[in-house]
Length: 187
Image (cartoon, rainbow, N blue to C red; front, side):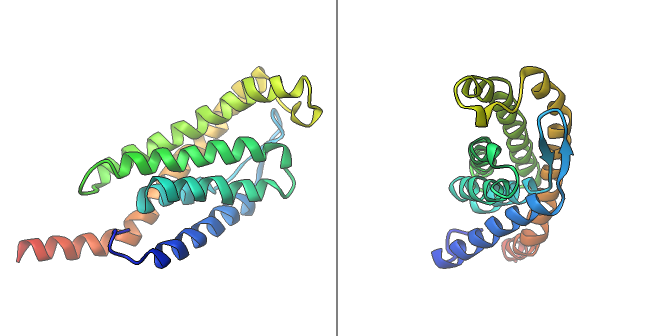
């Protein structure tokens, strides 16, 4: 989204994407028995927010929308989701905004980076942080190293779908703007 768009409009779009990330996380919850977590489609809105709105708004969309969805049925994962998905949006946004003119290849790299951050973040929480916290707080005693390894597969598929969906939405939302910009440059 261009910097010349008023901040209230960016704020409204951010709020809508937070809501869409929440709905995308809630709408399709496929259980992953190893960790008692679930596969979902919320990542496409986190990736979209990072690429389209930048790192800080990507962080907000990732940290708030999916974590709020975890509050309904999966509260033990709120901490992992807020940190991991927030970093996913931040990373995608930082890569996407590191160039002057955004192109599909650069946005693809941003989406892939965001997906890798998501997979790695959940792995660290499920393999290290939650088992450590679980030794003194039973609420976090939900996963193990072995379970985290099993979840690498579903999380990787979720990352690919999130990246592809986020990029498709980004192209759909910005394609006309890029065409108009190119036409003006050609005239």
